[in-house]
Length: 304
Image (cartoon, rainbow, N blue to C red):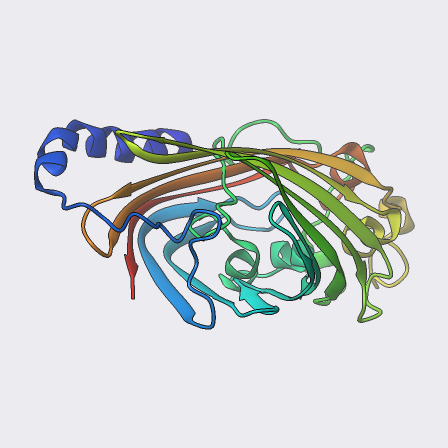
């Protein structure tokens, strides 16, 4: 059974018991901390989601990562905030927008690692900002093998390093049920010497079945960033020159979706997913096997 089937099966089983749940669930607080303006400030918030999910890996030799636990940690002060790996300071606050200076870990390195670190530090699938989507089976045939059909495993190349990026983030609420987030970032650790930017638009839909959030995003990644992680050259000792590849800048669109359904005072059913297309500047690399990356998670969340 592929990933998408497992994702839908878990949610169908939940929906089949919806009437029973609806008859036993107590009213939750009117101010849900997922909503704009409802997060308690000067307080650390911690949630833990337990269930099942998977993160795909588009690289040759990279395995899909099973996900059983996802922590959700965030803090918002008057100016300073931390949100699942994003460390920020609010520069300007108005009723419908906020401009912040932020730093965060660059997640490209996560594809070369076989642990949950990279997923969590960039994951907002079950957090207040709800960054989510769905995935096809990573065993599908949508592979590239590089433009010359030469392939390399991540074990064949030199280690890529973690980088920390810094820049600005703009959160805007032009309409009541619309959140627009723009980030413009550059490498501040001298690792990839590149830049990237993204825009994400999300809208929450409240109803009898809880909160459903739909989102669309577009990422730009510079040639220096792509080339550092997915390019192949003399630094990769032992790799024949025929495999050398120089990455180029890419535009990467993505889709996200999340479902939050309150079960009790501190318990919530969460089901999330995300899919992103890579762009030929990255997917033509001999390191890259597929043209998309994706993740999903389905389970229950407890708010401490």
